[in-house]
Amino acid sequence: MELIHYGQKLEPLTTYNYTHNASARICALFIELLERQFPIASLEQKVTLRTAKDFADRLSVHTNHLNKVLKVSTGKTTTEHISNRLVQEAKILLKQTDWNISEIAYSLGFEQLSHFSHFFKKQTHLSPIEIRTGAI
Image (cartoon, rainbow, N blue to C red):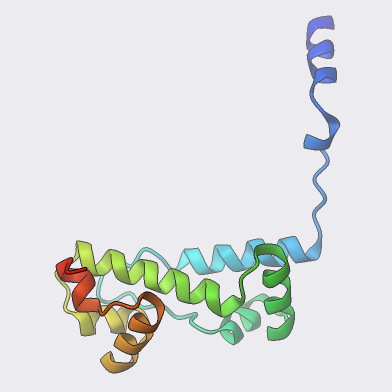
């Protein structure tokens, strides 16, 4: 018992006292909601939360508050987090599935292929075809 007591005293107390606040909780819940939508495993599955307003409504906070909390905690805005995750999933689907690009676009919540292509090119400076074929 003395050895256990001695070992516990060696551990810094700060590791046991995490300061949880509302901002950290909102940030964690946002990340969880975002990640819960992925991976997309079938053509029937579709991303439903795509905008900062969608996430803010789900978390029952104002869009500006969510954006501020994420910016302070992570250095990125809500839209940047969403965009980065959509691009990451798009790259995975382009490389690992034989779905056509319009099916991938639809599953990621884009109603039109042109909107997806424009979004993807703006984020990566490459077209979806270039990613799929590996012609970089």
